[in-house]
Length: 289
Image 1 (cartoon, rainbow, N blue to C red):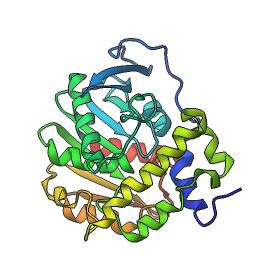
Image 2: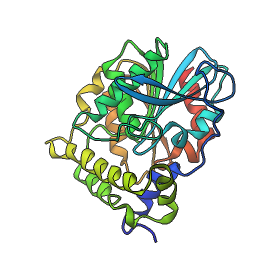
Image 3: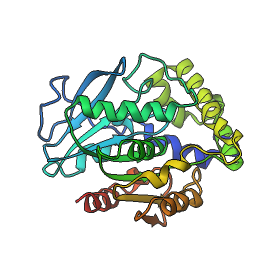
């Protein structure tokens, strides 16, 4: 049965988490470059963070997934098809997501800042002195914060499906996906297989509560004051049919990051990097180069 009143938004947010992932090579040293995708863990800030790595290019790129996402589930077409001669691509699982469990995922007031520090420290632990960020949805917010707070480390930034504030309309959308028992089986199944029903359900509820708290502030601020601090070249992409993130969020971000550019994809939804992977990858590679 479809989700009452939120079917389109829910599918746009969570269908990318179905098993359309890239097969992993057996676990081995992360330095095992080439066209294969390695899978490994490294201790960062007291937790063992899981990541995947592929490519042998001189330009390092970190992929940051969305809510309940992981590198493998959220970035299959990028891990598979981005230019591996030009780029070294790392896709991580934030703490409490994917294979970066334990710990369990929680959402304190600073969870985006915590993810930003984890992400940057992961890349430092992997010996990348400077790198670019590709952030989707929650990962886009994390990328914005990281670019603002660690400017000397970030080469370029791409963000899509992100927002720098939370409005009451956003909260209404989020509450439409709170109760996972009302989700369609097609959407629920891959997440339950990944996390188990209890963890999946509790984490979704906790995410809705955590991100909705930003709307209690007068301006709904997540990271608005940080946007002018971003100095690296920045590319904002927005799907005009995104039912989760209204266009004004992308326009606000672009307006407040000096010199940034905005690409509107008329048919793009929240998961535009998966549905239109070839076009997305081409646009991003051209920007990074």
